[in-house]
Length: 92
Image (cartoon, rainbow, N blue to C red; front, side, top):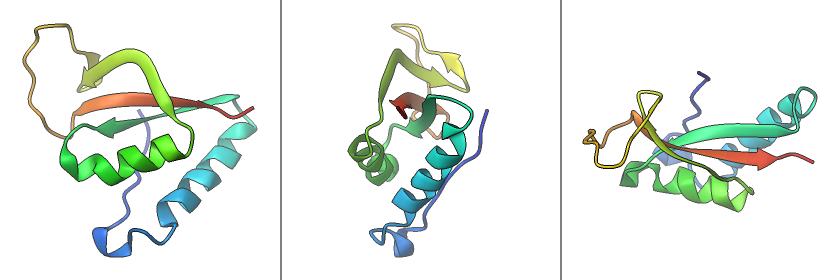
């Protein structure tokens, strides 16, 4: 589990999300070569999804999780904040 980062809609497109990620990545770089994060799958997360890809994050290739449990093919889950695609980034 980790922490959530949220930039309020009124404050978006000012580089705040990128600055938060850059700070977190610098802090993590002293502890690990790889960082990861998860993002929701519905439209409210679209800006975050684009930001993570722009900053070099790629899907971890393990699929999606629901409440931190991997979703098996054919399973039915709610499309809510708990349905997450996980990304990773190599810091080296």
